[in-house]
Image (cartoon, rainbow, N blue to C red):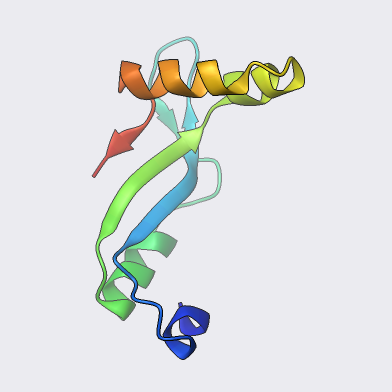
Length: 85
């Protein structure tokens, strides 16, 4: 954030990347890295959280097979795993 401010790059919001993991068995979120960091930064810098992107093991699997783009597109269309706050 400070780097962007020094370069006069406007900050429109934050993306919470690797925001937990969706359980493949019950579809409930698993908080892998703890919580509250992005919320604190959002409040401290007075910028909104634009999206929360959970860890998606299928993306890594498809990258290994060079089929990542189609997988990301399908996940985004599904809307279940990539959510807007």
